[in-house]
Length: 337
Length: 253
Image 1 (cartoon, each protein chain N blue to C red):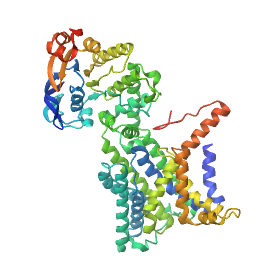
Image 2 (tube, chains in turn red, orange):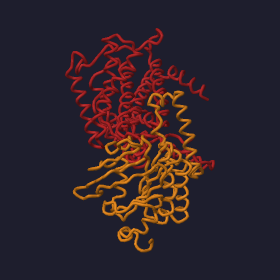
Image 3 (cartoon, each protein chain N blue to C red):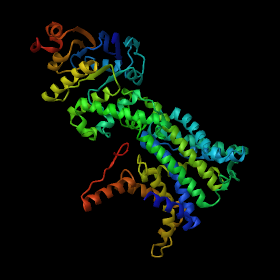
Image 4 (tube, each protein chain N blue to C red):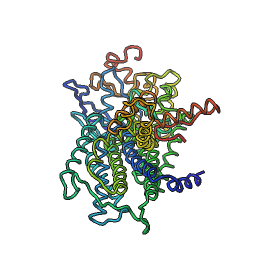
């Protein structure tokens, strides 16, 4: 079964259009960034609206390291993650003492500061005009120029991060984080240093997001401040909420929905039987936030816990109905053994 | 093992503890009793590091702990339970005990994420010890029940199990028999004595069930309005006039 899956994955990009491959690549990159936010939001309950800045730090670090210092991409990508993690640690130091709306505001301010620096520090970051000439990586002398080859790279990194994250959340650190979220006082009485764990997860979240930023920079080969606006932080938050907070697949499913939604809306805007006003809204990208808002509202009311949980519950319900079996369900630390 | 030396705690001018002094010897079961509001739980919170004392010193295994944070005190081998169980309700019984093993394990983020041999060895040890604790406490049948779905008696026992998982040499039990029926209280008394006799753990408990206290305690400290009014063995406490007037009444004399 798994060999069949690998076979489909290898052949799939060759069988479909370059456009569809690019959609899948973006889903992969956003999935990594959304997983970064999900590990933070889902496990410590901290809301960060500065994820776009970590994404941007990863993108600019990788781009500058490869273009100005001629560093190899395979070193620049993890290094970009580490640089983002260092900033995550610094922001985290001040932010772990803040909660809820205050933390959201502090991280939002960080995102704005990052944007101002990028725009003003023209000779280093390219300013408003952005950075060009970012190259695709080579693998053993073979350039990953084609969309399909880059797609494999992105999904391979996503695969690594997914399993690293899954292992982490099922370990002693995962249970410590989960205990901090449920009861900080009881966790402290068991020898768990609450602020230290919050800081670690904040740093890890920034690392994942920085790696996603690096992959984005080398994929698009051009980066400018517009890609790292607060709008992207909010879209990441929507991805996680829609996909499923705390669910290991939540970020991936949420990213897929948010990337595919404009395609679906654009398809629907061509349906002639719809009223002109609705087609106009469906066709205009700037109106899509309205659709996201409605989707978020629908998910919150009808599928609290996200799309993955809803599907999981639905499968459990239908298997009980048709086969008399219950699904195993999920515990706070992943699928129950 | 534990020395409380002239400890005072004040909340907005209200003196909750007034120069309280006593010590707990290794291997003892010591009880802290007194009417509601006498400062028993406050003293527990001061000893375990959740409140800083306004005066006095606390030593645990000859280390001054009165300025340490709760997680550091725990790591020295001092476990505690709470008056109202503070279990991790969304975790199973086994997962709750596993969290307790955190203080003596060391695998860090990369070791856990990459499942290194060191991490695997530690995870195996956590698993082994957690099952052993569940067996000692008779909770192995309920290993996959969510903690919030356990009856109150088993929640209290599980909280003791979670404190046991830190490998403590002293456990502070805050009203372990609160909300339990006679049968459950009897079982609890056996469990507490087994901890002392079989695992060599020293116990300091706060309790209102005087039958339980008189049955298991080697020594008793009585608090009233933040002052220590008596200390001695159960017989001496039952005969102490001041204790009878302040708390026990004539029924116990």
